[in-house]
Structures are given as structure tokens and as C-alpha cells.
Image (tube, rainbow, N blue to C red; front, side, top):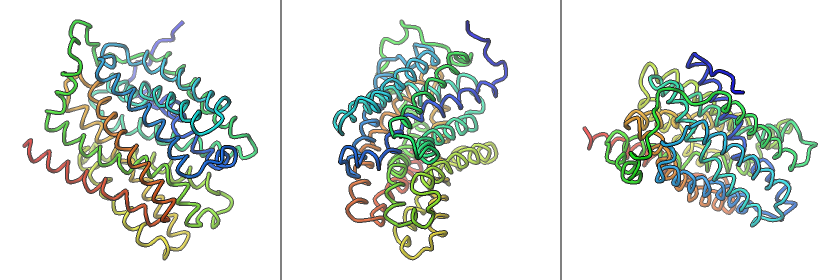
Length: 399
């Protein structure tokens, strides 16, 4: 029997955000076991990058299917979220206990990514369905939970260092099941009507029409630049910590503990950006965060060898705080620019393109950092630069 959904939007937003935290713990669960996988499967840094890219590829295919089939706007968001979280939990357990090498592991990670397509963008739609008038602040909370979910496997690894990597990954699946239960109990909000089947006869044309809206195109362009940097940064954080010797300078935390705090710092950035967006607007927050993270890339690439361990850690924490703070604000700008019956499909399309970009950047970043060292992280700099330029250009052309 379903319990009555919360009557206050804030209560619903808190539930969706918590479910997002639990569901997205599946995303980087394999990365937290990178050292163990290196020993068990003789996997190098590039192989761990392939495992991450397998998730991205599945996510891209899933979001494209949701966008172009019209499913994202024809079925209840809560139903899609719950089914996806259940599937992702199962495939993640399969990775932990059935995969034997990088190839078989990549297949399971691909299926996890396919499932995540029904968690992340649909979670954004759930937020809009409950609180359409405060999208920037509400999505900031949601992406903060995504960020904590991304960092959570590193925390599990840090606190459960005596556990097998298989059990740590299995814990992520249990958390995803809890997230599914929360959304099953909550349901979908009242503010986004379902598109009837007869109205969705050309979902591809309708979704692509969103790209013709100047404000959506501007927000999407900024988002794409941000995506070149974000997931690559999250992927190479453990590599940077090991290569710079920072993990040796803080032995009590090690790679896992430091990775958790650096990635989790983005949750604070999202929350601060959400509050700030109520005062200065989502666009200024998004562009400011993108400029800060871009500056951190350049500073790290040029100065990591001359900084003290404490100074280097401070730089990485600032970078981790800013690198994701723009994400909810770009998504909020995109959601506001679209007609209400296209929000699900348009956000799914934006996610699909953005995550296609991450596949290239993750592959490039892991390869060059592994071969040339920490300074090669400068390869991420074009993302923020082009994102800022593209946003300004699209806004100017649409004015």
C-alpha cells in the first residue's frame, strides 16, 4: 500500500534528492575499487577509464531512447525512476560478482549506465514536477545529492577498508534499492502533465525543436563545456592524488578518503550556488562557477609541483567545489526555456549530448595523465573556455 505523498513541495524535494543520492551511488562504484581491480584483473589506469566510459555509453543510449521515443514525457517519472534503480542495482551486483575481466566488467557497467538514464534526468523532471517555480535551488539540491552519490563509493572504500571490493560495490546496489523505495512511496508531482500517446506521434521532431530555442541552446552550450571537464575530473582525482604524492602526505585519509572529500565538496558548491541563484540568477552562478573551475585547471597544471601539500589540497577542494556547481543552474535554465510538455525529453537529449562529450574527455584525460603526469590535466581547460564563449554567443544571437 502506497503511503500518501508529502503535501509540502520541500518535503518531496528532500525525498527526491535523497533518492538521487542513493541511486547515483552506482555511477562510480567501480572507480572506488580501482586499486583492487588493477591487481585482480591486471587493469591499468586506461582500463579503469574504459569501465567509466562503459557507464557513460549506456547512459547516453538510455537518455537518447527516453528523449526520442517520447517515453520521458509519456510515462510517470516515478515509474521510470523506480524501474531504473531496480535494474541498476541488479546489474551493479552482476559486475561485482560475475565479471571476470575488463571486457565482461564493461558489459555490466554499460547496463548500469543504461539504468542511470532513468535516474538522473528523470530525477530532474521529478523535481520540476514538484517545484517548478524554484527550479534552480531545487535542482541544486538534487545535483548536490548526485555529487555525494558519486563520492559515496570512495567513502565506503575509506570506511570499509577491510571489506572486499565486491561487498563495497554491493553496498551501492543496496543503497539504490532504498532510493527506489523512496520514490515508489512518493510518486510524481502534480505540475507536469503527461503527454498523451496521440500527442507524441513525432517525439523526435518535438524534442529537437528545443534546440531552436535560443535560451535553451545557450544553456545547453554552457552545459556541454562544463561536461567536458566534470566527469573527467571525477575520474582522474584518484590518479592525481597518487601521482602528486598528496595521498602520502595525508596517510590517514589516503587516496579513498581524499577522493571522497574532494568530490563531495561539489555538494557544498551546488547548495551554495542554489541559494545564490535566488539572488543573482542561475546564469551568473553557472558562468561564475565555470570560470572558477577553468581557472583551477590552469593553476593546477602550472603550479602543482611548487605548491605545498596543504596548498595543493586546498586547490583541489576549491576545484571540486566549483566543478559541479554550474550543473544544476544550466539544467534549470534549460528547463525554464522549454514548454512544460518537453522538459523530460529536452533534458534527456541535453544529457545524452553532454555525456557523449564526457566519453571523449574521460578517455583523453586518463590517457594523457597516465602517460605525461598531472600537468596534462590542462587537457580539460577547453571545456570551460568554450562553454563560456558558447553561452555568450548563443545569448547574443538570440537577443
